[in-house]
Length: 197
Image (cartoon, rainbow, N blue to C red; front, top):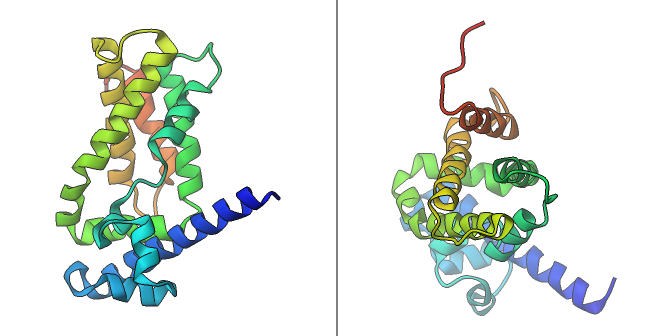
Protein backbone atom coordinates (compact mmCIF):
# COMPACT_ATOMS: atom_id res chain seq x y z
CA UNK A 1 0.00 0.00 0.00
CA UNK A 2 1.28 3.48 -0.85
CA UNK A 3 2.01 6.08 1.81
CA UNK A 4 -0.88 8.16 0.43
CA UNK A 5 -3.27 5.21 0.68
CA UNK A 6 -2.18 4.45 4.24
CA UNK A 7 -2.57 8.10 5.22
CA UNK A 8 -6.09 8.21 3.79
CA UNK A 9 -7.05 5.04 5.66
CA UNK A 10 -5.74 6.49 8.91
CA UNK A 11 -7.71 9.69 8.32
CA UNK A 12 -10.88 7.73 7.63
CA UNK A 13 -10.31 5.61 10.76
CA UNK A 14 -9.94 8.77 12.87
CA UNK A 15 -13.06 10.29 11.32
CA UNK A 16 -15.03 7.12 12.04
CA UNK A 17 -13.72 6.96 15.63
CA UNK A 18 -14.93 10.52 16.20
CA UNK A 19 -18.31 9.83 14.62
CA UNK A 20 -18.76 6.67 16.69
CA UNK A 21 -17.76 8.44 19.91
CA UNK A 22 -20.14 11.33 19.22
CA UNK A 23 -23.12 9.10 18.41
CA UNK A 24 -22.49 6.82 21.40
CA UNK A 25 -22.20 9.72 23.83
CA UNK A 26 -25.26 11.49 22.40
CA UNK A 27 -27.29 8.33 23.01
CA UNK A 28 -25.90 7.79 26.50
CA UNK A 29 -26.16 11.35 27.82
CA UNK A 30 -28.34 13.29 25.40
CA UNK A 31 -27.00 15.81 22.86
CA UNK A 32 -26.87 18.79 25.23
CA UNK A 33 -24.79 16.99 27.85
CA UNK A 34 -21.94 16.13 25.46
CA UNK A 35 -18.99 18.40 24.68
CA UNK A 36 -16.35 18.24 21.98
CA UNK A 37 -13.86 17.45 24.73
CA UNK A 38 -15.98 14.45 25.79
CA UNK A 39 -16.00 13.15 22.22
CA UNK A 40 -12.24 13.61 21.88
CA UNK A 41 -11.56 11.82 25.18
CA UNK A 42 -13.67 8.84 24.12
CA UNK A 43 -12.04 8.71 20.66
CA UNK A 44 -8.55 9.22 22.09
CA UNK A 45 -7.69 12.31 20.04
CA UNK A 46 -7.09 15.99 20.76
CA UNK A 47 -9.66 18.75 20.19
CA UNK A 48 -7.33 20.14 17.54
CA UNK A 49 -7.63 16.85 15.65
CA UNK A 50 -11.42 16.95 16.04
CA UNK A 51 -11.60 20.32 14.30
CA UNK A 52 -9.57 18.98 11.38
CA UNK A 53 -12.58 16.79 10.61
CA UNK A 54 -15.69 18.55 11.91
CA UNK A 55 -16.69 22.12 12.74
CA UNK A 56 -19.17 21.20 15.50
CA UNK A 57 -20.15 18.22 17.63
CA UNK A 58 -23.47 17.98 15.76
CA UNK A 59 -21.64 17.74 12.45
CA UNK A 60 -19.76 14.70 13.79
CA UNK A 61 -23.13 13.04 14.33
CA UNK A 62 -25.02 14.29 11.28
CA UNK A 63 -22.45 14.47 8.47
CA UNK A 64 -23.23 12.39 5.37
CA UNK A 65 -21.80 8.88 5.35
CA UNK A 66 -20.61 9.32 1.76
CA UNK A 67 -19.13 12.42 0.14
CA UNK A 68 -21.16 14.20 -2.53
CA UNK A 69 -18.43 13.57 -5.08
CA UNK A 70 -18.24 9.84 -4.29
CA UNK A 71 -22.03 9.57 -4.64
CA UNK A 72 -21.95 11.42 -7.96
CA UNK A 73 -19.22 9.13 -9.29
CA UNK A 74 -21.16 6.03 -8.28
CA UNK A 75 -24.20 7.28 -10.19
CA UNK A 76 -22.41 8.23 -13.41
CA UNK A 77 -20.24 5.09 -13.41
CA UNK A 78 -23.22 2.73 -13.56
CA UNK A 79 -23.66 0.97 -16.96
CA UNK A 80 -24.76 3.41 -19.63
CA UNK A 81 -27.74 1.26 -20.70
CA UNK A 82 -29.39 1.49 -17.26
CA UNK A 83 -32.26 3.93 -16.93
CA UNK A 84 -31.80 6.49 -14.13
CA UNK A 85 -34.06 4.74 -11.60
CA UNK A 86 -32.30 1.41 -12.13
CA UNK A 87 -28.92 3.09 -11.68
CA UNK A 88 -30.06 4.87 -8.51
CA UNK A 89 -31.55 1.66 -7.12
CA UNK A 90 -28.18 -0.06 -7.53
CA UNK A 91 -26.23 2.85 -6.02
CA UNK A 92 -28.57 3.21 -3.02
CA UNK A 93 -28.66 -0.55 -2.42
CA UNK A 94 -24.86 -0.76 -2.44
CA UNK A 95 -24.61 2.22 -0.10
CA UNK A 96 -27.13 0.74 2.34
CA UNK A 97 -25.38 -2.64 2.24
CA UNK A 98 -22.16 -0.87 3.28
CA UNK A 99 -23.90 1.13 6.00
CA UNK A 100 -25.49 -2.00 7.45
CA UNK A 101 -21.98 -3.12 8.40
CA UNK A 102 -21.53 0.01 10.52
CA UNK A 103 -22.51 -0.02 14.19
CA UNK A 104 -22.25 3.77 14.12
CA UNK A 105 -24.91 3.99 11.42
CA UNK A 106 -27.34 1.76 13.35
CA UNK A 107 -26.77 3.76 16.53
CA UNK A 108 -27.19 7.04 14.65
CA UNK A 109 -30.51 5.86 13.20
CA UNK A 110 -31.79 5.09 16.71
CA UNK A 111 -30.42 8.40 18.01
CA UNK A 112 -32.35 10.39 15.39
CA UNK A 113 -35.55 8.62 16.43
CA UNK A 114 -34.89 9.29 20.09
CA UNK A 115 -34.07 12.95 19.42
CA UNK A 116 -36.16 14.09 16.43
CA UNK A 117 -34.91 17.65 16.94
CA UNK A 118 -31.59 16.46 15.52
CA UNK A 119 -33.25 15.17 12.35
CA UNK A 120 -34.47 18.71 11.61
CA UNK A 121 -30.83 19.74 11.31
CA UNK A 122 -30.32 17.33 8.42
CA UNK A 123 -32.10 19.64 5.97
CA UNK A 124 -28.87 21.05 4.55
CA UNK A 125 -27.25 17.61 4.17
CA UNK A 126 -30.38 16.17 2.59
CA UNK A 127 -30.55 19.04 0.12
CA UNK A 128 -26.91 18.49 -0.85
CA UNK A 129 -27.60 14.76 -1.27
CA UNK A 130 -30.58 15.40 -3.56
CA UNK A 131 -28.65 17.99 -5.58
CA UNK A 132 -25.87 15.47 -6.14
CA UNK A 133 -28.38 12.87 -7.33
CA UNK A 134 -29.89 15.42 -9.73
CA UNK A 135 -26.44 16.24 -11.08
CA UNK A 136 -25.75 12.54 -11.61
CA UNK A 137 -29.05 12.03 -13.48
CA UNK A 138 -28.35 15.11 -15.61
CA UNK A 139 -24.95 13.73 -16.58
CA UNK A 140 -26.40 10.31 -17.41
CA UNK A 141 -29.25 11.71 -19.54
CA UNK A 142 -27.56 14.75 -21.08
CA UNK A 143 -30.37 16.92 -19.76
CA UNK A 144 -29.81 20.15 -17.81
CA UNK A 145 -29.94 19.75 -14.02
CA UNK A 146 -32.97 22.10 -13.95
CA UNK A 147 -34.97 19.82 -16.27
CA UNK A 148 -38.30 18.71 -14.78
CA UNK A 149 -37.56 15.03 -15.45
CA UNK A 150 -34.19 15.27 -13.71
CA UNK A 151 -35.65 17.09 -10.70
CA UNK A 152 -38.69 14.83 -10.35
CA UNK A 153 -36.64 11.63 -10.65
CA UNK A 154 -34.06 12.84 -8.13
CA UNK A 155 -36.76 13.89 -5.66
CA UNK A 156 -38.72 10.66 -6.05
CA UNK A 157 -35.64 8.46 -5.63
CA UNK A 158 -34.57 10.46 -2.59
CA UNK A 159 -38.06 10.00 -1.12
CA UNK A 160 -37.76 6.23 -1.64
CA UNK A 161 -34.37 6.31 0.08
CA UNK A 162 -35.86 8.19 3.05
CA UNK A 163 -38.92 5.92 3.20
CA UNK A 164 -36.72 2.86 3.52
CA UNK A 165 -34.86 4.51 6.41
CA UNK A 166 -38.09 5.55 8.15
CA UNK A 167 -39.60 2.04 7.87
CA UNK A 168 -36.42 0.22 8.93
CA UNK A 169 -36.42 -1.30 12.41
CA UNK A 170 -32.84 -2.23 13.36
CA UNK A 171 -32.79 -5.74 14.74
CA UNK A 172 -36.20 -6.81 13.43
CA UNK A 173 -38.29 -6.91 10.28
CA UNK A 174 -37.02 -6.50 6.72
CA UNK A 175 -33.49 -5.26 6.22
CA UNK A 176 -32.72 -1.80 4.93
CA UNK A 177 -31.73 -2.99 1.45
CA UNK A 178 -34.95 -5.01 1.12
CA UNK A 179 -36.99 -1.97 2.14
CA UNK A 180 -35.18 0.18 -0.39
CA UNK A 181 -36.07 -2.29 -3.15
CA UNK A 182 -39.70 -2.24 -2.01
CA UNK A 183 -39.73 1.56 -2.12
CA UNK A 184 -38.12 1.64 -5.58
CA UNK A 185 -40.67 -0.95 -6.74
CA UNK A 186 -43.43 1.46 -5.67
CA UNK A 187 -41.88 4.16 -7.87
CA UNK A 188 -41.55 1.82 -10.83
CA UNK A 189 -45.22 0.80 -10.46
CA UNK A 190 -46.13 4.47 -10.82
CA UNK A 191 -47.12 4.72 -7.14
CA UNK A 192 -49.99 2.27 -7.52
CA UNK A 193 -50.56 0.17 -4.37
CA UNK A 194 -49.52 -3.46 -4.43
CA UNK A 195 -52.44 -5.89 -4.42
CA UNK A 196 -52.78 -8.31 -1.51
CA UNK A 197 -52.05 -11.91 -2.52
